[in-house]
Image (tube, rainbow, N blue to C red; front, side, top):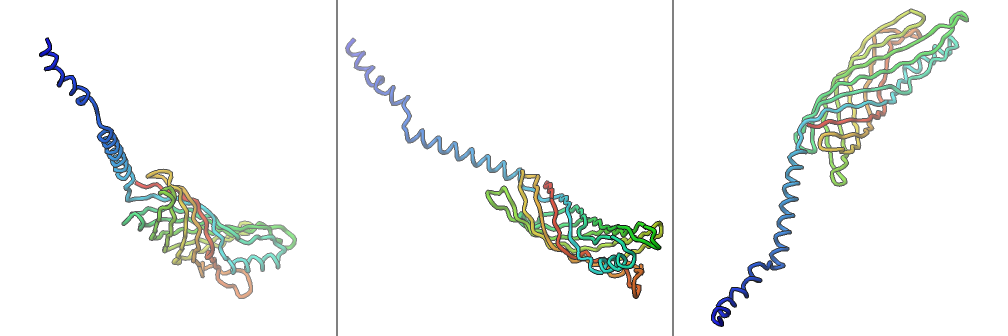
Length: 247
């Protein structure tokens, strides 16, 4: 019996060693597991966020110069006791499609619609008449866009340059009397914007910029001294709200 006890003694001494785990091994295993988890998670996020295309929709207002048009309406107001207002702002809407050559550099093309109008009452032989001028402008443009993500990739600063070809229609009416004309012109715009990245595919934000666009002859003569051609100068600051969908 004494011999059996002595023989079992080494086995009993090894049991705690077999089932014990060193603190170093345990800590090392936990660290490796966390690193692996973070690496897999980052890999999945990067794969999900690698987008090359963007569809941008924007709407806002612009503040054109319209100096010659204001001179014309002021002359009418002065000669007919009218109250035609100046065109101080106009609505503009655009959509564009972009391809990103690099995460911070994109190129694309788009379409823009600009709507501007003014109206008022004029008097002819003490009889009130309704006077209106309506300008509808369409354009197609190419663009170059840079985009820099900041603040832990939740926000982005962007700069865009656009150049395009625009065509505009001019309509002047007074109690049913109509004058219509058309003109075309090249236009450019530079903008800077701020985006909130709501996710990998959706961004919303605002942009502000400056546009250069002028129509010099709508082939319509203004009824003012010298009968100058109807003109419209859309040059001026622009502001817009933006929705960007990336895929």
